[in-house]
Length: 207
Image (cartoon, rainbow, N blue to C red):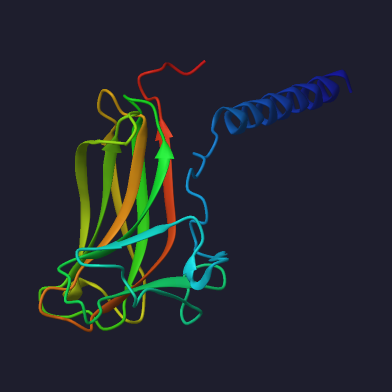
């Protein structure tokens, strides 16, 4: 009986030790926080419900007029953003969102692309612009990330693009950018959804 009790006690202690270790590991690992606002384009801009809130849009010439929120084939949630070229024949179109970040932080940026009508040499690309704290803000440098060529994008599924970069000295803000380069495809369009940005101090030792 005593031997059986000792065996049961040892098993209980081993189980409790394993449980404690699991809990400590779970507490030690924390998923990186997504620093983007409206990363899945679920919230429309109150002043223009075809555009996503918080994000700014740009084009080589004028304002992009063919960008719109769509409910067809979102990766997550109820909507995705359709980036499309227009009659202005701009060489590039895009969206951006500025986020505070400290110099030296390692930034990871991911986005999902899906083809609508992009073809030929057209492509989409993610990038990060590093800005200082002056007024007006000045670009320190720019890090170009992964490219999604028209031929590599499917109309049936999503493709993940990811990049990692370290914020250079003097950085106070980063502009998270998705750009469409339509090339010879003036009516080309892609869907973008489920963006994520995290910034970690990898040089700082964990407790």
